[in-house]
Image (cartoon, rainbow, N blue to C red; front, side, top):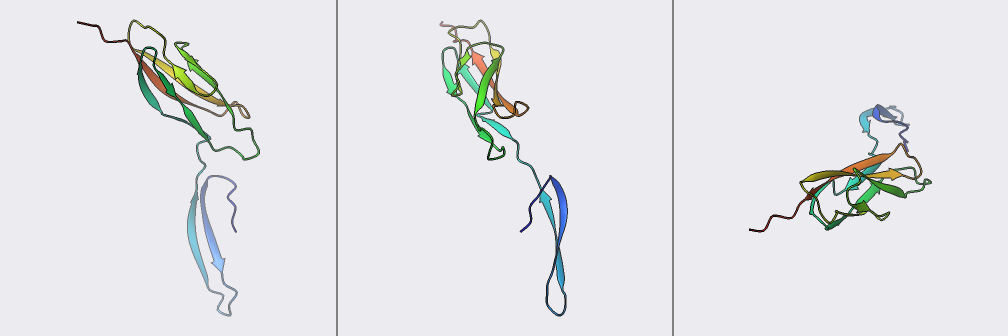
Length: 123
């Protein structure tokens, strides 16, 4: 068994315990998953509509896997389950950034974008 300790490349060599002592090598790449991903990455809503956001976490298993949600600018609202609701009215198209931050490690966070669209004008 081999355990990776950091991202990068490694050469693994296996030597057989036979009289010939044959060996083989393999190059192995190790990657580190992104710690937090927010889905959907981008959404478009009309005023008063909502979209639920979700996170996937790749933190150490012993860490708290909850997140806090925030928005910038503070247009509309987001609850702690990740449900974003657009404001009841806006004058023009607006972009809001939704961010999930790890409770266990506040240096780990990810964001998504929400475009809020005003209702089409009636003719």
